Image (cartoon, rainbow, N blue to C red; front, side, top):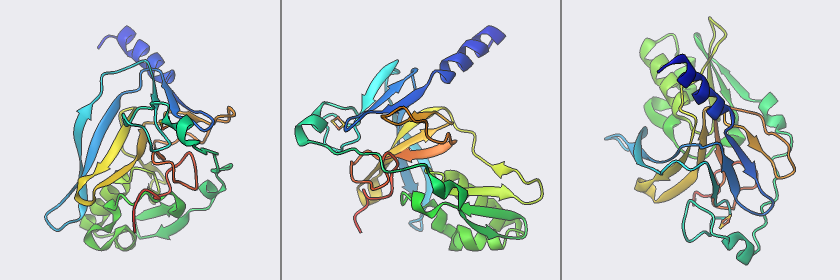
Length: 233
Ligand code: FES
């Protein structure tokens, strides 16, 4: 790729944005790639890997359903108006971002933003990410703990290297992923990857993160973010 190509690609991705509309869909602009992915289990039944199922043709602008009632998911078909969807944004000014639960192990430090859990369950393998962090002077435990944190789509789990003080983040393509989990028949949130800005209906930008998840069932009590309400307990 030439320098000019690189620059124009960077400019294109700078233009990417997701705007929440009042009681309506997410308006996605800037040609954001839209992908459907599934969470796959390992032989022991633990969530382990992602599988890309489908890429939608790239559109400059499109509207994604957030009420959960579209007849053509993931796109909005106007059903939100017919059902009188109340999409009031309740995420506030995200004070939780300043107060994660912190687990300090010998080499790793886990920042756990519990109210962002979307039940993707990557964190449960090998005894769970919390215990693995506490044993992070064991190379195998350390490796699994990092893998589990990086697979967490919502960014509930963020791992830091204690020696360098650096946050360990996965390198993610700027894109929106529709999460599906066939083993449980769950239709998960929209996984916003690579730091795409999300702006509220009244023009307020949310904190930009490498990983975050937006509600697409309409039931979250932390709109526009997913709070795991799509999962039946
Ligand atoms: S938000 Fe428009 S159909 Fe769901």
